[in-house]
Image 1: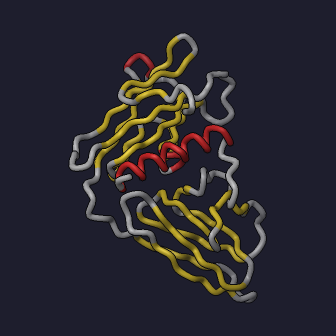
Image 2: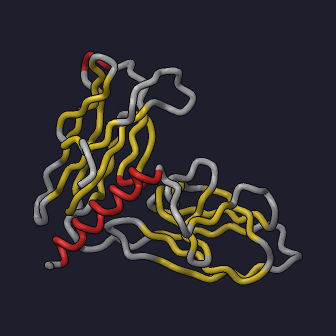
Length: 213
């Protein structure tokens, strides 16, 4: 199996597992309680995936470890290993030693972009649905938020997109999950248009994931 084929297979498998388990993933560590020493984390790019002591961060506003910088977490005194990653960037890890007397700490870092060709993605609503309230989640949390969504550093390979009602919405529309692929060596922008028809989400520019194989 070639490296490219292997990566696509692993991503497809991750999508399947995520769809079945609803983001209830093993190896995730919660940091809901505001106990310990407050640590402010600032990163570039602003959305990265954080692991602490080998466990994926789980907290309010965090999707599968992906958080929006800046963010404050609370850690107990002692030594901790923090690891940051994002597709298209070199991963970065560092150790933090916290003492009981420490009041707070700020950690700022900029991830180094890799030499791979990067592509731009633009997700918008159709002209007739400009007022539609919708949330999209790219690659299980790499990017998330209301539309329009523009990402300018996607790497080649298979990507997933989930379209759902915003949190707290009264609408009862099932999430729409689709996939799209970026071929190596291309730098053309990817455009996906989201719409709603007959009480269902739809999207042009990506292929709906109808069932798990």
